[in-house]
Length: 361
Image (cartoon, rainbow, N blue to C red; front, side):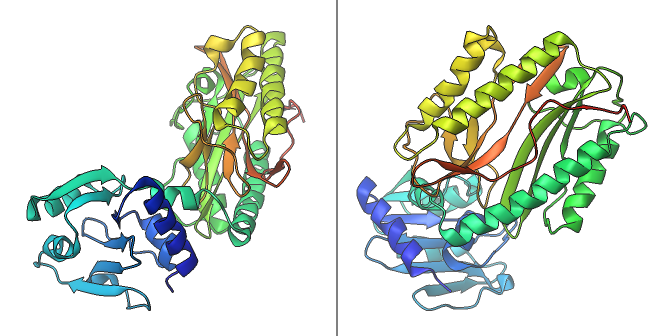
């Protein structure tokens, strides 16, 4: 069913930025508006939204995308030209294209007409998706509960007999057993110096030794909403330097969480975490932004970064994940998801954050 309230919110955003028409081609965004996943793969599937309330859908017959009230359907078969169908319904002038729509689709539409001006139109939908309603918040809570269990499973299965890839595969199987549905996913498992690479992927043959940090960054979609959490523990022992780094990151993360409330800039949330780490002398080792939005995709607006001046509003969900990365030595990151509430924030992920030394049982 077409969600009329969400469509009207998108149209309101279109009017704010002066866009009379946008093409929505991103599958999560189509799902957000219609409750249906298309998964067009290489084929063309899109929804045209006009500021006068006119809605058109362009779908291949193979998608089994049935008609719905409030939307004019345009179907095509393999071998037919869907771009001519789209171009026919467009008004001259600016067209807001989806940032995630493959360039072959965008270019093909533009080749049908010489009076169209392409601009990015995704913000009109993204701003709506950033403010989760209560149903979405509960889905995010459910996903976070699975994430808590996955982190506990991962930590309980740390074993020098398992390399990074083997443990990562076990965690992925755990997620799938608890409702995750996704293409092949590589859960981040980082031993020792590999934890100093913020986006290190689990590697076969990378083994564990005493004193190593073990960084888990675990993420998966549950009922179409993502969870994402990072915890760092130590195997058998921890040096004083590594303990110091851990406590600094923990302090920075808590300071940022405590700062979150409606009305603050996302860039200021980043600044709060960054100040704690900089004051401790590790500012140049904080290599990433503080956080990113999470919802039907694992990275979406808003982000907690120095370049993001969006204002936190109730319903926004994003990560708080400062880190310190010492090349060829250690990396520590602690990540939780939060939802902005009326007077602060709700922390979704609950797994404990006190420093853990494992493997001495």
